[in-house]
Amino acid sequence: KNPLQQTDPPSVPVDELFPSGDFPEGEIQQYKDDNLYRTTSEEKREMERLQKPMYNSIRRAAEVHRQVRKYMRSIVMPGMLMVELCETLENLVRKLIKENGLQAGIAFPTGCSLNWVAAHWTPNSGDKTVLQYDDVMKLDFGTHIDGHIVDSAFTVAFNPMFNPLLQATRDATNTGIKEAGIDARLCDVGVAIQEVMESYEVEINGKVFQVKSVRNLNGHGIGPYQIHYGKSVPIVKGGEQTKMEEGEFYAIETFGSTGKGFVREDLECSHYMKNFDVGHVPLRVAKARQLLTTINNNFGTLTFCRRYLDRIGETKYLMALKNLCDAGIVQPYPPVCDVRGSYVSQFEHTILLRPTCKEVISRGDDY
Ligand SMILES: O=S(=O)(c1cccs1)N(Cc1ccc(F)cc1)Cc1ncn[nH]1
Ligand SMILES: [Mn+2]
Ligand SMILES: [Mn+2]
Ligand SMILES: [Mn+2]
Image (cartoon, rainbow, N blue to C red):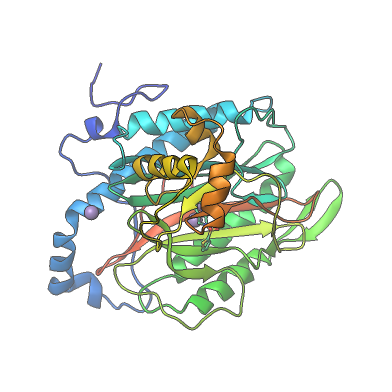
């Protein structure tokens, strides 16, 4: 048995599959109107050589993402308990990435938002939700090495009537990726995404819809240990003239909907994250102080969910968690939902604006 080969189901940590320490590059795209200036510039290539350790870290995280999602796609079935789906995915990430405290692991909770729920839904412990044949599930999960985060998502639907809706978002996300680049204006990316998204019409249960780009969701910059950093990337027209810059990481994500194309916070919250800009805060309430210590030690500024507190032994923490939110130390991220009965689809990739080219870090042979 070749020790350098992944098993099925996967069990070999990816760093053992690439003993050289060089992990596969993502998809390389030339910048628009580059006319080979950047591609051939010796100065730009030297800049990249200095970044090689960081490129390898995030490519290792991307390889984990690809192997986990490939396996998950092969096992997700109607009738599966959502909690079971998430724990299977999360335990596989931990194994393939060789989880190691805050140096390697899960970057944020497994989003498995269903139907009109667009994002930030993961089951809390005890949740009895079961995946259904007619569900549209956005599987959105993150991996990281040294805080270099891969944020990538795809949509799963069993009923083929949803295929045009999924294709609309897949096409829109790829359009956003093509439009992105050094000196690209954020508003131009949004216009291009919306144009493609809304060129699709879909028939669901006998009713015809023009797909809408969700106007109050967007892509985002990513920083070390910071899933939402810097600029937001609009997915409709009317965005800012601000330009993307060399060296930036972006999550390019689009959401297509048969509903209003507008989401509101709803349902019980599961996702939480420390406010990146808040420093040390002395707390008088012992339970809140102890919970903050647990959060600092286990998650730092990465997003976590209630199930992650449960699994490390935290109990009766909801009031203390509320205290931390009310104090502005922790930010809740409730599920964001379009209107009941509508369907939302998502595709997402993490890209890096390298000095010589654009690298779609999380690209795989699946999406
Ligand atoms: O909606 S966001 O809060 C946002 C979009 C633009 C500026 S901030 N968000 C960042 C985030 C929040 C919580 C997470 F657990 C993971 C990520 C986008 C996103 N959610 C899932 N994948 N990507
Ligand atoms: Mn680093
Ligand atoms: Mn995501
Ligand atoms: Mn994202």
